[in-house]
Image 1 (cartoon, rainbow, N blue to C red):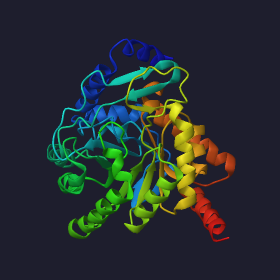
Image 2 (image 1 turned 180 degrees about the vertical axis):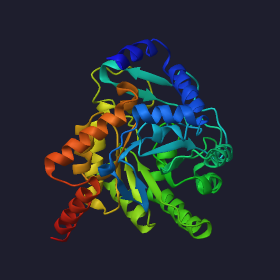
Image 3 (image 1 turned 90 degrees about the vertical axis):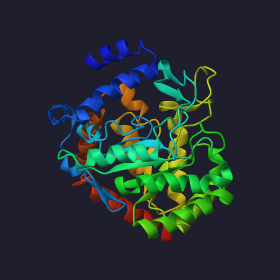
Length: 366
């Protein structure tokens, strides 16, 4: 109830203004260990049974923050303190860019949803890498994997996309625990075309060369919820051929058919109206690939997380749900997951995931 009151006050302000205020507060805590300790004490769940190992990394729990909230690595150390097992920073681009004109973020309160057309506003990969180098040198840097989401610069033509991604990746490679290729945002013109075979295969081929040159680094691909079945075939085949480490299902959607009332704003829709399609894509990917999957889109409750785990995900990402549920969300989800483990008789989440994957492997072979 206390957060509902605070949220009501915040929702009187323009959405991006609230986001900026929250980020300023979190950026302060990022630089002050006493503030981080206080946040950890209040918000961070301590549930050892929820540890998950994926991509060669260990996550304190499967609940991550999706890309788009901390675009410039302002609060990288704060997200684990708030209870997240990981956070995707960015999306970052090779060059700094202001994004689309404001207003570009809209609340659909009755739907507990958002529409955004931010357009990858960020300080640029080199500047963000510098921030993270400074942050990682602090003695209170958290022992938690953090990802960096990389996208195409708005002014880069499609035929130059590989070089554009390479420039951004080279800058952030040393400061990321894992990397995510964003080729699925609806808010950069032409970006989703990069999911087509003619563009995706050369991009992923270059990623393989960079891994050989710069050293191994887990690499994930974020998938659009608006792809049809044949397009999902292309994406999974390309990801497997390039030996990527996982797929994220999904980004935001341009569809509006699940809304009770369409406000007529362009951009990517997130929150519960996205959930059915995001879940369907997750299940489709599970049928096509053994690559680890991260679920995103409309996740608000422990029941939502469990549904995604049962559908094949190993980790989940939240964004819109955190805005509507508040800073205790990760702790509430973690407690719900522990109760579920008790109910199904699993000693810990990693054991449950291993047994689930073994059952799936048997079914695939059959």
